[in-house]
Image (tube, rainbow, N blue to C red; front, side, top):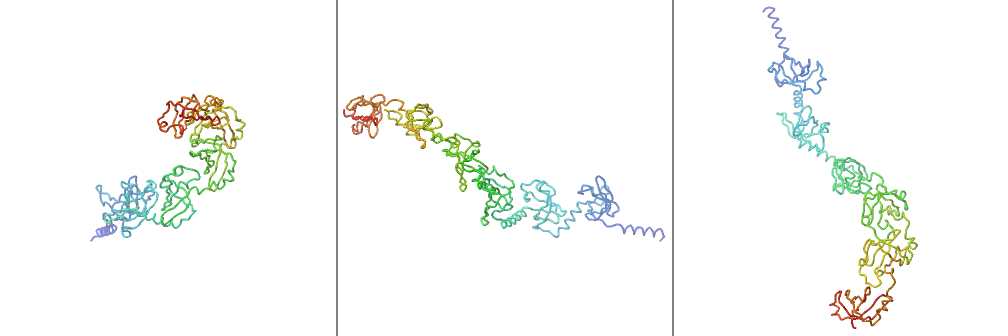
Length: 517
């Protein structure tokens, strides 16, 4: 062999010894020799350099010339005769090779959600992409930004090592974590302890607060020292708030919470802050038939009873006088801290007109008033100075029997009356209507002396006799003993009846008659 042939043979052996054996699907190290806008050129020791798509790198700008990376040989020679490599597939395959022998279905692993896809999420598990179905994610109420911002623990729901397919579930992990958190929380609860929770439900009677695995009830009465109509006035769904543990029953899984207890009870200092006699402005928060509740400070309410609204004797209707939210000025007349009760008054802010009632309305004085209401026994008349008097039915007519005051008067009617009696302490003024004219009974007694026979008209019948009219505004009673029972039952108003006067009582203003003429 010539020297040239020998040298050529040595060169071929040297060349062949430097070439490695490469097969598609193989992972090999390579050195970055250059990069452009689309690709990274990598030398793996093959006869030609390979190409990796630039999009496969998370941070292409950080790639440096001479840096060694692992790549997977996808195609030794494509249509253009190029060596096609993949860095991302190499990383995934390395990841599969790394985890394939160490995890199995049912194992708990850590991972990070990297993107949202149709029907679920893609999770990075040590460089391997796994699928998390939406139904197994337990991400309820979380935004996609929140979901992809941190790591989570998952259960391997299904794993196919040959196909490199990995399906995860987070639901079981969350359930287990909640159970562990619940058990831990029950061991930490102490009465009077403050904890932060999230409002997860609102009802008419309160709100349910998630304390981190254990739900507690914040009752409406423990939300505020002030009166509220509905829990939604204080809390809202999803709201985080600090509450106090009032009581708990682990066996029955019940926790009672308080919100108002975080602040001091305003009733503790009520005696110092609101002594009797204090005049203060407040807001009406509730109106009842018997009075109105006035909030004089946050969490402090007092009752303005209907009897303390005005000096008028008759009961007023608060629902006609006030509206919720109205500002009123009141005086504190009594405070009971133990019962959490404050009695208020409006009339105490004014001079008591009853103390001067006798001066305002002397007996026998003729005054004007307005009819404001009725009872079966009389009519109530509003007088000046906010006072009220009453006309009894017996003082409405000298001669007529008044069955009801509305037979004589109407509500709202202006009337002249005579003051018959005044009791300032008892808050009573007795008025008379018939006293405006002289007593006609002395004349009636002369006109209808005993034994006078007269034709009368039946007014009404009763079980004790028959009422008849002798003349205009003159009535008499036929005693039941002075008329036959059969005859009395047949009578009706308007019938004529001949009678004889048998009794005249001027003092009692009564005439008794008989049909036995």
